[in-house]
Each structure stands twice: as C-alpha cells, then as structure tokens.
Length: 211
Image 1 (cartoon, rainbow, N blue to C red):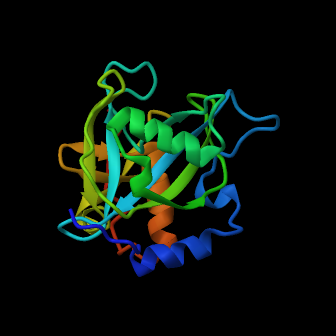
Image 2 (image 1 turned 90 degrees about the horizontal axis):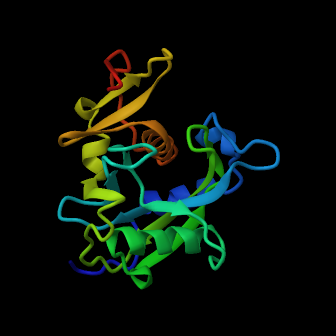
C-alpha cells in the first residue's frame, strides 16, 4: 500500500485535544494508589486503507487465560528493557502481528488506565502507520486473527449498540464482521471518536448480552 506520511486532519486535531486530559475522561477505571499488578501498553494504530483510515485490532486467542476471544489493540506487559510505554507497545505489536516499528509514527501517549480483571495498568499509545506493510498472526498462542477495520465501519450507527454484563452494567460496543468489540477497547474507541468529533448518533437502547 502507498505510504502516507501525514495522518488525517481529525487525527492531528485529536492529538492536540488529548494533551492534559485526565485518565478519568477515558475510563472509569484508573490505576489504584501504588499502581496495579503490572505496567503494560497497547498500540492504537491508525493507517491508510482502501476505504479510508483504518485501525488495527486483534482477536485474542480463544485459549488465553485472560480475555479469551476478545477483540483488543496489540499490546502487553512492559519488559525490563522497554524504554517507556511506546517501546512496550511497538515491541508487543512486532511480536504479535509482525508490525515493523520503523513504519509507525507515535503521536501521543494517553494517561495510564486500569483493567480490574487483570490488574494491569495500561497506557494507550496513539500512532500513525505512515508506511503500511504486511501484518499477520505471528504468535498464534496469543492472537487468533488480525483485523484492519475502516473507521467508517466503526462509526456506522447500524454497527453500534451496548452490551450488558451479568452485573447489569452496560457499555458501548461495535460489530466488526463476525466479532464484537466491547470492554476496554470499545470504551477507548468510543471516547477517541467522541473527542475527534467523529461519532454519529446511534441508538444506545439496543442492548445485547455479553456471552
């Protein structure tokens, strides 16, 4: 695919708006005093595609102990040699989906957020894929499939709804082909699209049960 040095205008504007936003704006869960069980990072990678800007997602392997089969951003736990969250996110993306780190331009790091189920403190790293190449499942023990999803599909009101947990809590979700994006990933995408003024009116009264 042809390289595209500059991200779209909405993504550039988004980077400016992110600066100074507290973690509470992105998630209701922020790191507890003293931090969580482990520091980690995820790569929110946007890039050019045949149908406009895409975001790279992965479906986690169904044999994983935590969050099996869920759709997520590439990423994982920080290792001793990682020089910060961006280095962690890029290394993990290379290990999981064979992403060439040199093809990626890091735009911003969001505040660290918390995932109660795993106890991880997660720093989302926003990036632009200025030189797209081939990506694939490199670590099948962790990744079921790689998804390159047009942003236009995610913001399509007919693909949006809410999911309800057994606890009764509901949250935003997206339909992506045969899979559903929900949880931490969907919540973060929803907030990012809202901040970028990309969200289109959708019916939050459509609720599906988490299975």
